[in-house]
Amino acid sequence: THGSIYTEGTLSTSLTCPRVSINIRGVEFCTKLIIIGSAGIDIILGMETLAKWDVRIDCAKQTVHLTAPDGQKVEVSATEPSGCLHQMEAKPMEGIRVVCEYPDVFPEELPGMPPDREVEFLIELLPGTAPIAKRQYRVAPKEQELIKENIDELLGKEFIQPSSSPWAFPVLFVDKKDGSRRMCVDYRALNDVTIKNKYPLPRIDDLFGLYEYTVMSFGLTNAPAYFMNLMNKVFMEYLDKFVVVFIDDILIYSKTEEEHEEHLRLVLQKLRDHKLYTKLSKCEFWLDQVPFLGHIVSKGGIMVDPSKISSVMDWKVLEVVKEVRGFLGLAGYYRRFIESFSRIAKPMTSLLEKGVPFNWTKERQAAFDD
Image (cartoon, rainbow, N blue to C red; front, side, top):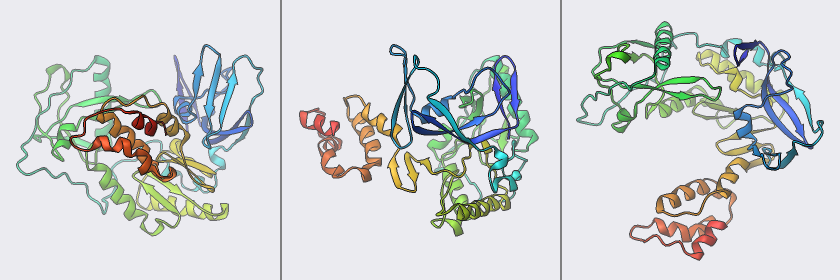
């Protein structure tokens, strides 16, 4: 695979290390790195890695605090001599067993229209729903250029086609982790009625025409469920044997390395057979533990992701019922790890009952602290 780092120009590389183990003060941290030519810098850690390690920088004390996946905390001082960080291992992509046998499953760009699937995406409207017209948002000249580039690219891949539909929705941009911007369609009005599309009254200076997707688009309310259905059908014979699927996340678990190699090969073959693709830079292989849906899964069992614990621990005092509901929702997600959760939370859950006035008592504060 390849990666790029954007400065005043572009640096490209053809080598990626998907799993690099870094030892910091005796604690092992793992991350993905892109290899570039000598830039006078040993390593650059991006936002994704900093978030994964729950990195906290204390400028006043000139210290950096990190949290390993197993919950161990490490403090590094800027005044200490170098040598506390050592590279332990790096696996170039070419060295990952099995993966190199399936280069077509990891394309840099999608090869074009997908084949007909056994799951077809449909949009069903609530009875009596009429077409809805949404005007395009005003965008800056630079975003106009991005819209044109995206339209040309999608037309070239046949993912969209010119449309005369009475349904239409504006586009907007969201920031990606790598700093680039992704064009999305604002389907909120459509999702309110389960589906929607109406011809807008466009701004003349933003007009590029009306197009409709020929493939399932991001942002539609039923899209995750349809995709989950497809993935379950594709991997049906492997589910609960050595594969767990949640929408577009695929976890492969095995008892031995030899067994894992065979399991990985079977999964990649399924993806190849069904012309489903994955982005190599987002994949990790041969891991001892992996974060999944707010948990850390390893051979030792399942534990809470430390970064999620810090979110709960740092929660400010609750002031309205809506905040109580949000806190209990997150805390309740991990109730399996909390003995007598219902009993501890009862003083707070009583606030959710209809007609109960909001009164933050000492008893509720104690439950919140527990």
